[in-house]
Length: 403
Image (cartoon, rainbow, N blue to C red; front, top):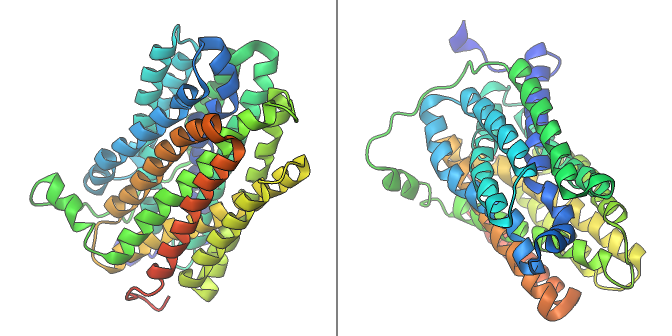
């Protein structure tokens, strides 16, 4: 009977379909969201804007995504997860085609804002969907797989856009990202199992009161802060990194500079690995260790040799996705155990995650223009160390479960 069903287990067709569908959704969303990142120098030249202004192609999308999370998260708690996810991917794919045809810089930015709002459908529901539809014993593993999909998507979008830019310019690059988004949207529509364990949340009172209730748990507050600080530092390094690698002494082409995003493959591996370690040793230990690894990676990018820069990017990417994968699953678990709406708590985590991306990504352009790479390292390193302190505070909050 439905009431006794405990969720899809490893080895079952439902588990495979759910895991693959959410993985592909992560690929599509993050390839679409971050495809312009490898194109920032090209967009600077094509539209005659400054490096700081070019980062708006990323920051406006992530800021709009953050706003969308505040809307779609609560809606998903009442209306369900699958419909929102599928509509999100479809509308974002259509907007991706329009962005590749944008006639001006301001039109491109407006379309990116609309696309960012549409893309909010995935992070608003993905963790909650997996937590509800998969067996509790495997949900952390599947969430790690989802985060690895976001890492692979970020990698794919950046590599694809860097390569296609050299073939036909920025329009060809963003057109390639649009084709990928359309393909993944169709695949998710065919694969994603319908919700079987979703229970609508009956709400009383205005939305602001509902949102305020999610800020009463100190552990959730700390996790929101960790999300914003980590993502701010991470995006700052990669946004400014495209300018650094195309400048002297490296003078790399867009395609070659884009190869550094292969470091995302390490993030795809570190996220599910960290999820497994968290199940064994506890989240309170794994999260600060992963953040410390990210901080070490940022420091490694400071010396001039290219091999050292690449090594630093690999280390910080490994640490970032490990910390993010465990922290995002922690939010869902904490909210569920504390009697809060899981979709709302996960959406708030993602909201602050993308606020951090928008702020850190924009500040990175100014830091690069004003102080070079050392300024970017100070910005990203300071943000990461603040996240480390918060994670240590998080470890002292009252636990609602054995971990």
